Image (tube, rainbow, N blue to C red; front, top):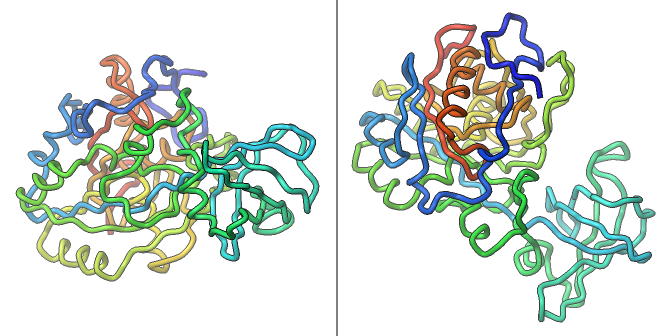
Amino acid sequence: MTTSLTGAARPFTLSDFDFDLPEALIAQHPASERSASRLLDGTGASPVDRIFHQLPTLLRAGDLMVFNDTKVMKARFFGAKSTGGKVELLIERVLGGNQVAAHMRVSKKPEVGSTLTLLSAPGSGDNLRATLLGRWPDASGALFRFVISNDNADDPLALMERHGHVPLPPYIAHTDSAEDARRYQTVFARKLGAVAAPTAALHFDDAMLAAIDAAGVQRAHITLHVGAGTFQPVKTENLAEHQMHSEWYEVPAATQQALADCRARGGRVVAVGTTSVRALESWRDGPSCGETRIFITPGFEFKAVDMLITNFHLPKSSLMMLVSAFAGHDHIMALYRHAIAQSYRFFSYGDAMLLSLSRTEGAARR
């Protein structure tokens, strides 16, 4: 990849969000304890190296932290076509009526009406099948619609919990384990529907949440079911040509009230993860519940968020563009240079950073 960690001219293009990352810095396993990961404090002009459990000391009484309470489904299945060819499914949506929408990885696509045999948990004796109905949401859709079934007519969510695999990101090389089932999930996950974790929230354990409460910081939740599209790089040099993936979100009434109360008392809204930012900013410009394709790039006017806790993101990803819009492109690139030089751990199981909203480069609140 081309290194582009120097200041970028405007307007921004895809190349401005590229950088070289040593493969050794891609975290393959989580830290021994959730809050023991490193925290790069990027709220000032110069980076400060911290440990994540120090976060409560960087916040103020009256601030509001907004967490994503989505829960990761065991959405990955392995199986075979009737011809014996291997197939892999990644279920993105549960549609009702035992139907699901899924990504399919296979050498040759099976015909509509074909039934795949899916591998079940060892010793279960379950006869697990997936029948292809067509593409989703329409004939040109990127996903495929299946009926998932077994001899007992169990619903897909039950079958996923019993037989599915944790949908680890493509850059994690090992197969999923019991550790992944526990650690690739937040401690407050409640609403099943994601195929990727809101990774900035993985650093929080019960002791951290108690310390936040003790510091007088308020907590609220949104839901955004993270889709597999979060890992897809942007491929068009002209950012305006990129087609953003869709994700379902909800900002409940209690959270809307908590946000209003925070503004009234002069507190700061601290989004835990880019998924919380996407939900909050979608709500400020639209409904409180629905699908969002929001694509945040430098120059975006932030209306809901003042601070952001986030992990380190993939080169050329929409999330690199989001954090650059939030904290300023030059500042983000300087932080990434520092993180690489100091051997921070990257991506889903990696370390985190704390950012403040930039008042330059077009980023503003209200």
